[in-house]
Amino acid sequence: MQFDVRTLSAEMVISHLVIDGRDEADARRQVEARGLFVSAITPVRAGLPGRGGKRRALSLVLFSQELLALLMAGLGIVEGLEALLEKESNLATRDALERLLAGLREGQRFSAVLAEQPDLFPPLYVGIVKAAEGTSDLPRSLSRFIDYQQRIDLVRSKLVSAAIYPCILLLVGGGVSLFLISYVVPRFAEVYQGAGRDLPWLSQQMLNWGQFAGAHTTLLLAGIAAALAALALGLRQMLASGGVVRLLGTLPGIGERVHIYELSRLYLTLGMLSEGGITIVQAIDTVQGMVSAGMRQSLQSARGAVEAGLPLSTAFEASRLTTPISLRMLRVGERTGDMGPMLTQSAAFYDGEISRWIERFTRTFEPLLMAAIGLVVGAIVVLLYMPIFDLAGDMS
Image 1 (spheres, rainbow, N blue to C red):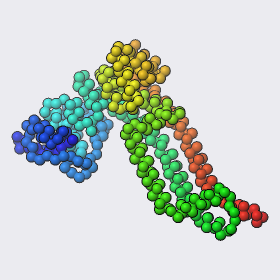
Image 2: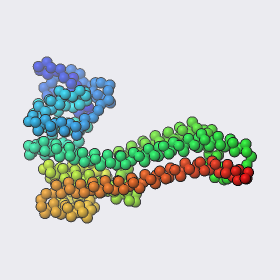
Image 3: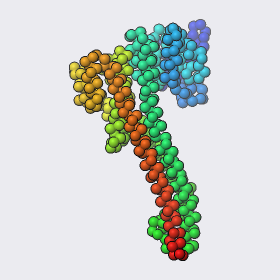
């Protein structure tokens, strides 16, 4: 739990700190251990500490890019953070930077002060910074993380872009169908009822449904809204629990691609950590919180095999964490000793395969979806006009 603490230093300087503690007493002890006097302490609830606005998370990529530029210009880590604090206007980001600077001025390591804010700096980020402290090469580690995150975001953006157009088609097609059923069909039904003719069975069923929809439009719209809300809530819960990945993994054709996407992210993360000087066992421990439950079990099995003395390629092959191409590349990395770059190259191979599959899938799926929507709308229109065609035939 976080607490907003107003402090007073020995130099009579008033400042605000956000402390993570089990309770108020624990937060107070942490502040007093820094030699500060606590003048006020309140729990941090939704929004900014002590304010009503919504807290905006710090952008890790932007933070890393700006910090990297300052470090490459010759500034130290404290000077760089001070420069970022001076130009920052967002209160949430300023609060995070002030907490980082306070920890560094107390003599803590940069990785340690980052770990004190796990909601902003994940274990992966803390891990690469901690490894960089051992090699005194923080700029290179930040550069690796920026490249890693941009590659992850590139694949994710392609998936989102591929899903936007089908969603728009479904929304427009569903809206047109709903308009026809709830507004147009009931008015045609009134005309046909006065004609005193027997209608084709399909037309009659659609007109009956149209009359029901026209008479209960508000109830129907409320039901659709409730169904969409329930679907959105269920999808959100499935995303949080990894259920979407498991569901997609069971679909024929798509399940294999989902597995390849997971392997791509796994290899890219392991490669970045390995190039940063982190051992493969530590890298596997770090990455386990980022993968699905099924892959987590496979990683635990592979980790045990590596600790038992087996090569990484053999452990991954036994745990079904390879493809024929990646297995050969891992073996090459073991022979040359460049396992980190080889893992990264394997991820790049997977990324290319996923991008090509997304392009082929969208080219095939979008025309099929348009055809399906056209068939639904066309069927409604044809069923509406079939009685008119019959009447025209009788008159001729």
